[in-house]
Image 1 (cartoon, rainbow, N blue to C red):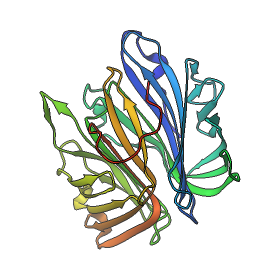
Image 2: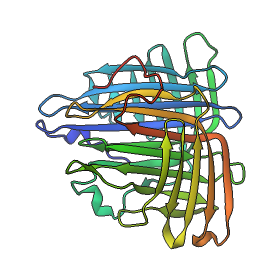
Image 3: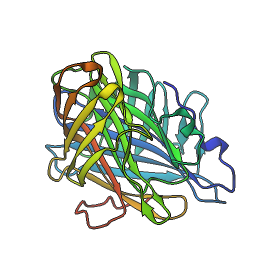
Length: 326
């Protein structure tokens, strides 16, 4: 898995954030794990590191959410990020503890790294201010997650992904969609980010970047200059129309089970904040037409999806975790 941490080279005067994360979901039941290792650095101040652990279990009710922050932040010799004495994350796996939870996970990449932004020069350009990649857009996870007051969760061949993003600020509004465990094709996957940014006091249209993996082939989705996505979104789900390479057309519907979304507050380096709603056991339906597929088909996943919405409003109705960012 390819990933290059940015925080060790951050200039003292600069503001920045960075996140390495994984999500893994059971192939048998709606149980999912979402672990993030983040860097938060306001301009002119030292960086701090945080670990966020969220476990979704449809049968247990609201997600388990915990977070710990430390001034001890390093890039380990064989990994990407180490936060305090609590957690370390790298290409081979993740080990850590947070708020009574602990985990030891081994990661087997099933797909090569994905760089979402096209053209490639956008990674060196001032805009977008958020850059993202997926070191493993599809991966297999083995290991154990332990939570207070319940039996250990054993991961054996769980599917998911490993992600990485960084920048000087978050998008003004964003959606992240990830999908696996599709009933019609267990090897298929979807990894798409959509964003809107504020320029001159106005919001730009949605821009999408990502890939659909289908039948062993990768199909590019969206671009800076491609067809604009059609988006209808709310904290409970979204319907998104996307265009891709070679005339590919996708219609994606994501739905969050009632009461099963996690809510967090993310801070930008300048001190502004977004509310973020995430469900990593969402259902996904992907209608595929055109492109190299040559035929229409439907992919459906009962609980193998991620739906995340980042926004400024506070009246979304999802309870936030009792900790902030920064």
